[in-house]
Image 1 (cartoon, rainbow, N blue to C red):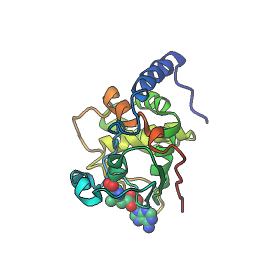
Image 2 (image 1 turned 90 degrees about the horizontal axis):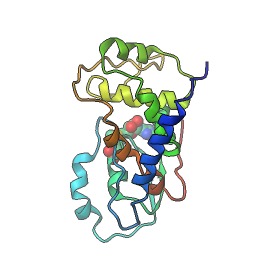
Image 3 (image 1 turned 90 degrees about the vertical axis):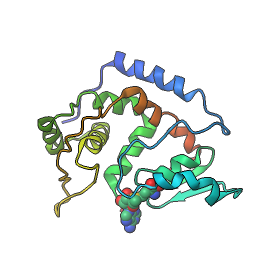
Length: 194
Ligand SMILES: C[S@@+](CC[C@H](N)C(=O)[O-])C[C@H]1O[C@@H](n2cnc3c(N)ncnc32)[C@H](O)[C@@H]1O
């Protein structure tokens, strides 16, 4: 069954907020989009050394075969083509939805509560809409145990609830993380699924 659409008024509000955030970047401006997922093995710790690592090296195209939470990709900033890949199709689907309509993902995220029963209900639900699945992906990522991504042998996500107290959707913060992702990839993103 296809999910019901988010209410139009709420979608418009988020779109306005997003366009305001999107209007600021230029090629030389610091990136406004940031990683929005907890991801095991993320290279956030390395990002502080990017200047040292890349120095004056100029390049026009960025290739990232192991995208994960995308710390390095986001830290390098916008203004060039990027080919981003990961073997995790749910992760790639989430980036694609965030890129094409972040406010729609946010609307679906608003329906979730950071609560044990709600977590397991969401984890077990069958969803046919990619935006709903993406909202759930981010919700589970933010509220699960250690933010790890794990599937059983049948390919079913099976990470337990994390008992985190941190709000999983501080909307402005989340929207800011997602805003401008389109500008990061002015030509296209290519996600490889296999
Ligand atoms: C440690 S994370 C990447 C961190 C990220 N590069 C960063 O800047 O923070 C590793 C990612 O590689 C992906 N991965 C592992 N093996 C892969 C493979 N053979 N092909 C594509 N992606 C793979 C995993 O799904 C995971 O999302």
